[in-house]
Length: 180
Image 1 (cartoon, one colour):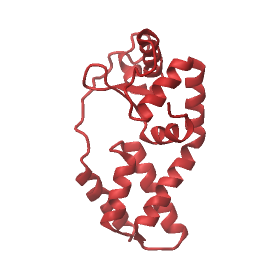
Image 2 (cartoon, rainbow, N blue to C red; image 1 turned 90 degrees about the vertical axis):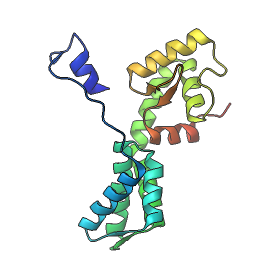
Image 3 (tube, rainbow, N blue to C red; image 1 turned 135 degrees about the vertical axis):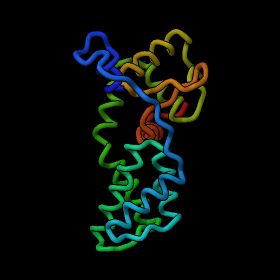
């Protein structure tokens, strides 16, 4: 979203200095192969189950998936190990969550400032519930628009489909916000 704002916002200096191209999502198989190759470059063998955990935890989000893999690599190096196993993959996920804790706390604080409807929307999305559940439609719409402006949520392909942009933030919200 920052790049889109930089190049598509008429008030920005780089307005209309380029175009956007939608890229195909990276498939789970491509992630597994790419990560295995990157670990192999450092002499680390990657077990299939561990790669699956990295890919599943990142949910296809490039930044999150790479952060989890990087944190798994940190865990492997700290142990002077040469294999990515399921335990190292889990340490990578936990390390990524720890590394993002301050950013997630700030994002939640920003959402709190937007009001209770924004918190309810985030709780609904993080909990896999319908976006508008328990919220008056206009309030939910205003909250979604405000959250979209901050890049916290993104519109999905279908009518009324929304999601939290950062899958690790979803996990943080699921642990932090009360389920209701």
